[in-house]
Length: 282
Image 1 (spheres, rainbow, N blue to C red):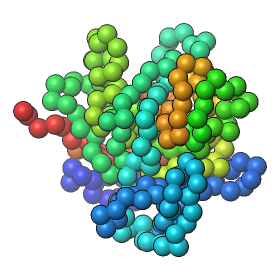
Image 2 (cartoon, one colour; image 1 turned 180 degrees about the vertical axis):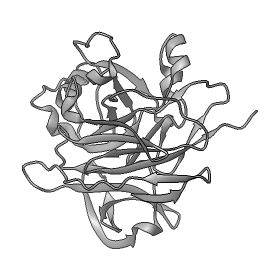
Image 3 (spheres, rainbow, N blue to C red; image 1 turned 90 degrees about the vertical axis):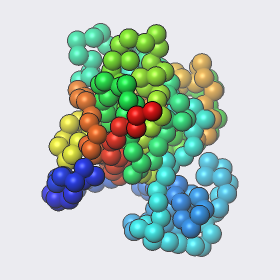
Image 4 (tube, rainbow, N blue to C red; image 1 turned 60 degrees about the horizontal axis):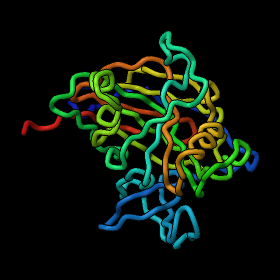
């Protein structure tokens, strides 16, 4: 356990948890990052405390350039630039709160402009009243998917990352649709890396606010698992490389306040950390 000073200036306890990395049958997990360094934005492979630069299409043909930089010298960005941000609601029994278990995945969408990366600020709009965190496992599509079967779905998944489906509950209850409540700017933090080769069917997902553990559950407890979600969505929406799917949040959530620091940790991916601010008055 480590004590550090948070963005608000007050001490925050960060929990260090040793976890084995769940792997696929290949036994190889690769972490890909998108980062800024010396005025350039690049993709790379995260190798402990360094990044090996890539050239080309992350979701197609690419190669290592031979250049490597220190992780501390780079600014990590959202790990991809999706054309679509899709999400699934009510996908853990622990989050149902007495509501019936859905027979099919409950699909809604966020906006690409809601995506931010690790270290960026979640900005609460001035008129927002009840903004909650929702820590989630996020699927990153690697190959065009249309009408794929459950068995075919894994072939279209590039990897997974951590995400926070930030939600304004008052708007969510009152608006005609969830577009504003779920899709406002900064309401889709993602990162810090995309883990490829991870056994995403059984990873630990946890959320901490100011070091306090708030959510903790494994992805094996999803009502509709990752392949089922990808297959279902692909019936109606063509998924393209780089598109992302938030798979649902476990347990209960609470309001965020300016000065809070939210950490979403997905086993084998890393820790997505964002601080919370409120938009300036117009």
